[in-house]
Length: 265
Image (cartoon, rainbow, N blue to C red):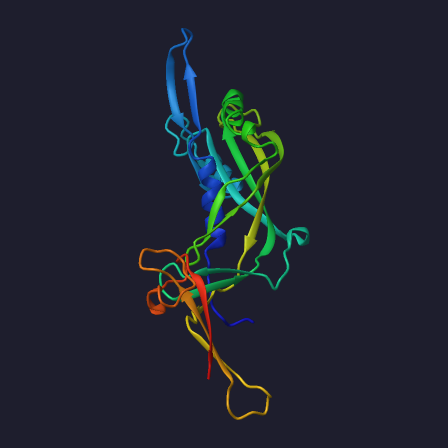
């Protein structure tokens, strides 16, 4: 089982999908007349909240800080196997290989894991936090389901639900005028993910021939049975051997029919 190297980049895809959900959030501020004073896109990156807090606390330049607020960060905090979502282990996904003709790619059903993901919103002002939250909460009731391309070579897409479990707030300001205030909103999510093993690639058998012996110990076959795909020159499936193109010119993803012929041996 182990020792067969493969890497589907699955976790990397999940991180990219999750971050993309929140990378277009904008903060707008108006002056007393109602005119737009500021429109700012809230940056987001994959990093622990403690790392950003440490950089924030180490930044003593209040007039020109290296880290500006508001800002968001997220990270995977854990993974748990979910047996309730497990599908029979002998079932397979089968598809023609996306890069090589006449090769059939297959995958056994994946392992279901729940990824615990924490999204942190850091702001200086309380209203900035609510502005960001109100751009997120309406889409999670309590889940949002993006479609994710899981496997490139099989062109496999799956719907991956992301559930919002809880929202909490923390004020890390300690009252010193020389320190910068940070309000932190923490959103805990569960991503219902799947992990696939290695992809198996096998050449497609396009022509099969079998001989029928009766009785079983006979030395001479009574019948010969052949089977092959059938497809006309204009792309229509056919069961006629007289109307089909050569079976070597038919790809696994074409809309073909079976041609079965039984002849006396």
